[in-house]
Length: 131
Image (cartoon, rainbow, N blue to C red; front, side, top):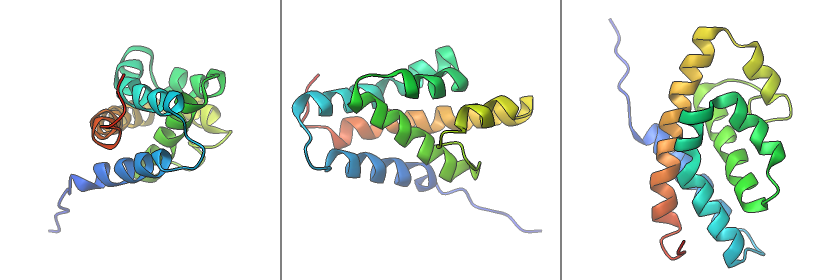
């Protein structure tokens, strides 16, 4: 019998790296950095209240670039961790709509765990940004 050991860094590493790279992008200003930090912290609450499909739809509806960047990163990280193809792309909403109930609920559970990582790492990565 073979056992797979879960390494908690599996969830933390892609989130930490994504937020760090986002923060270090050129042409960032304080307003955009605050948007990024706030959106990363709020992902868990949004996802647990409104669900995965609405969060994916929100990605296109957001008009604040910093917030939109974080939602895109969330789905990129979730795609990597879940091995669910096309989740982060333009077809993401269709992918979510076509999942079975068990797949959707499983992906939502993983998404909530990833959203918790975003919330934690936002405070660590954006420690110098207030608000």
